[in-house]
Length: 114
Length: 112
Image 1 (cartoon, rainbow over the protein chains, first blue to last red):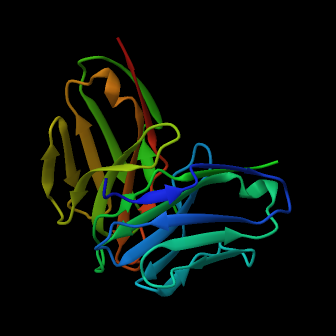
Image 2 (tube, chains in turn blue, purple):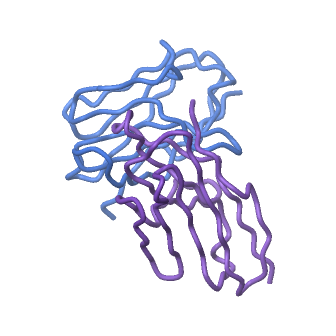
Image 3 (cartoon, rainbow over the protein chains, first blue to last red):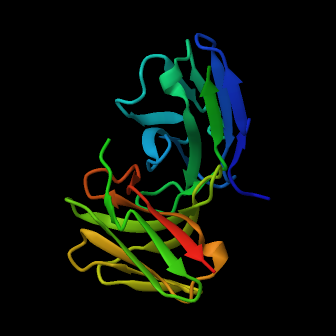
């Protein structure tokens, strides 16, 4: 399967702990996106990368959140000092390196903060 | 964050019926995408639309890019049980070509 891959699929953590998620995009795609989705809502944009450069961050991305894409391939999203409000599905997507194109999503990482 | 308005929010239909749903925006969009999401899974791309007035089909699904560029429509013909799920519209508007804005979703449930 050459689709977008996310790991882990599920994560349960205690409040205050740090968590890190990984996303492997479709290999020839230059753009990589992170979205967050809460129950009953559509996905909300967090940030995106063009190759290794992080070009835009949403106001939803507080200073406890950090994303990296060090070699322009896989990406990680870290949440420090997790809060219960961070519980959500975190989705990664990738697309070819030009604007206004199809984006393909991974299966997501379901985070539960207890 | 900004979201597109989808209608209806949810619908129950009988197997074999046709389904219509729409998505509207206050701003002009360059691209419209339609996704289906099953519980606990990521959205799966169904159809992409790139030009105002464009009509595109994918099997039993047909979608249209509204001529005002502020709306899009998705039709499903002869619905079957596996059509159950949440359908999201998404698009790139002219001011934010780098990110997708998603709709609020239409939940489809099919009764046998």
